[in-house]
Amino acid sequence: MSSRHGCRLLTMRRLRIKSSKTSLLTITRSPLWIKHMVYILALAEHKFWKYQNGRSRIIYIGTTKTGAGRPAASAVNKASQAFRTLHGVKTLEVHIATCRGRQKSETWRHLEASLLDAFRNRYYQLPKYNKVRPKSKKGLFGYNGLAKLIDKFDRA
Image (tube, rainbow, N blue to C red; front, side, top):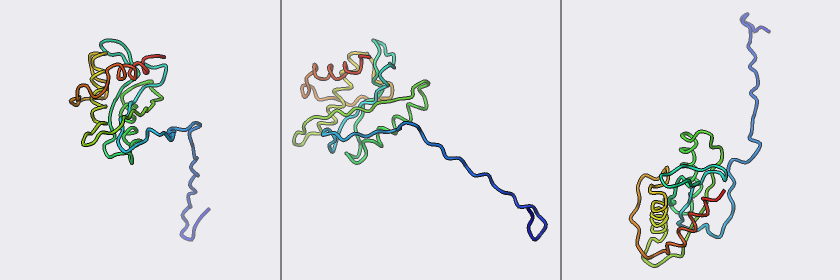
C-alpha cells in the first residue's frame, strides 16, 4: 500500500482481549453488612501463615475506615499488598465480624482491638499485616467468643 506521498502505510495489528475464567471478586449480601465493621483477611483454606506459637490463616484484622461505603475497597487494598509480597498465594478470603452498637461507644473499634488481643495471646504476635495494636476495652467481649472466632481460621 502506498499513499499520495509515496510512503507505505503501516497497518496495526489488532489487540487481543483476555478475561479471567473465574471471578476475581465475589461480594455476597449479608445482614452483617452494617455502617462500621471489622474484617478478617485470611489465606485460602489449604494455606497457613507460621507464627511464633502455631499456624493460622489470618493475615490481617482491620476496620473499615469510612463506614459501609468502602468495605470491599478496604479489603482489596490490604489484599493487593499481600499479593505483592506473599509468593504462591492465589486466593484470599475476606470475612466480616460485627457486634451490636452501644450508645456513645465505638464498639467496632473495641471488637477489632479485642480480636487483635486474642490473636496475640494465642500466637504471641500480631497478624502479618497488622502493625499497630489498638488499646482494647476489657470486659466488653467474652474471651471464649473471640477465641472461637479465631479458631475458625485454624482448621483446614
